[in-house]
Image 1 (cartoon, rainbow, N blue to C red):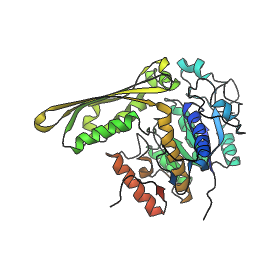
Image 2: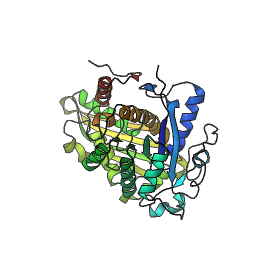
Image 3: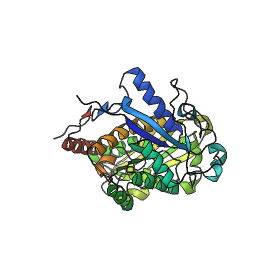
Image 4: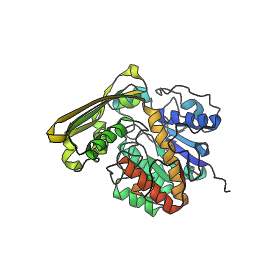
Length: 373
């Protein structure tokens, strides 16, 4: 039986998701259980096969620190869920570009230090033998995201875009990654049981039962730096499109209903810390035009929900590259991202297609949640 090599991962942005990811890898290694994971194995890879070997940030609280220390540095709010040993991974200074909004300077505390060139980052990526870079920059980091996407493509490694900047859905970037024999997955990661997946599921159910959505909103509040960053509405254009289209795409005519759906961050409440509260409202027209109203409140740990998905995506990226799948296969992003290259109306359909394509490639994934017919 072949032994899988470690999945060598680099992180861009050592924020709350990075903190949750680093701790989760150690938690599951020591615990020996797969409970709570979506897929226990993908192509034979377990969560314990993931190794974070490279890290980038711009904060004076994180740069130059061991990753085990940096993940707990301010403004991170994820608590210490497990004691971490030193990793030997020292957080290096990255490019600031538009990654720090003016109102976040005090929180993100950018270090006044030399910023790396694209060529230097490519050199370091190759020296560290990375399989992929994961983009965890703040929402609104448009130029910075594109810079790191180009770095990954030119280095010939995978790029996982977890934020709502349209990279995987951009034809130009898809072609760059294909030409460089690299993989691109995105955009805007979903949560395991987050507001978007719950909203999408309710919207799909309404359609399946012959009713029609008249209007709907999803209002999200939270207390971490992500929500504070998003109080600058100029950074939210792509976020609103991503979250709203994720719901609209479940409907027969997404473009028609798009303007009657609103989804996105709506407030920063510091004492909520890393808790996210979503209020979902749907007005539907059912049998004989009789109205049906749904009001729902959802409370989750925002970053745990995203990290559960990311653990799947990391392993998926690894097995696809091993099978020489390059560019941006839409079926690989559809189950995991709010704004994939080709929107899908049903999450069950997206998962079905993923299993179908993995079967064609001879990649096993366990457990399975939808049957193939």
